[in-house]
Image (cartoon, rainbow, N blue to C red):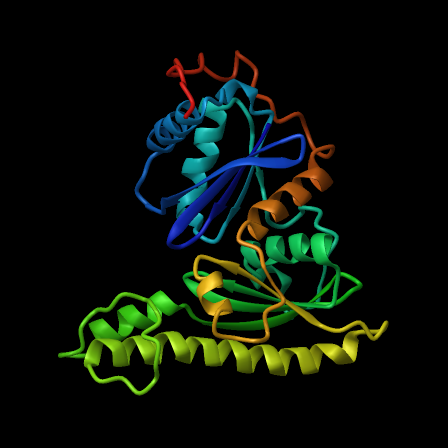
Length: 285
């Protein structure tokens, strides 16, 4: 089995693949101060609940935009799974030709999403990731990563409005059903949610027009959306062609397949690593 980690600023999404198929996935809050043992015990319990055996994990791959968490996840991988994790970063084979001025500035999550989207849907594409930040990435059918846009995510915008104003309340991030609202809470919801939809519609429209210049085959540019609020945003915009919530995890699997045969053996020998902790018996659901 392959254990994949997508470490974001707000959440860590992890998934288990068996024979190329995603068989289970979980989401947990990102804590910079959480230790390798804490992560190990949490994942131990998640595996036990689903009746999975950590000893069946053959490899681990990590994508992260939170460097402070990386060491803990890497150390957890060696201690609890006896594997040196593959980390998405410089030197990793992706198949992408990155056209960014400084390729090292492109977030690992954006690279992973691009690999997954191109592998599953083909190009040209605009990829919208609706997470802590809302990112827009443009890729061609020739696997060229051209660049994109970065905007504050919906939750960041909501938090900033609450923290920087004296009287405006914190609200649930849901559609109020109208833009001409009769109370403050719904007015805020309208501005946040429908404003974010409008931003997505406008940026996708402009990016599709710019990206069409690179479409040598004349194929139409499609928009793929992923992230925690992708389905909510899709209800209010016309530009999204596919919503794929597991896009990043799938991208990690594709990148793993491209890299598993390279480099030294990542298995930790018994001499290098103490005995694996006892695993609680899982009963499944």
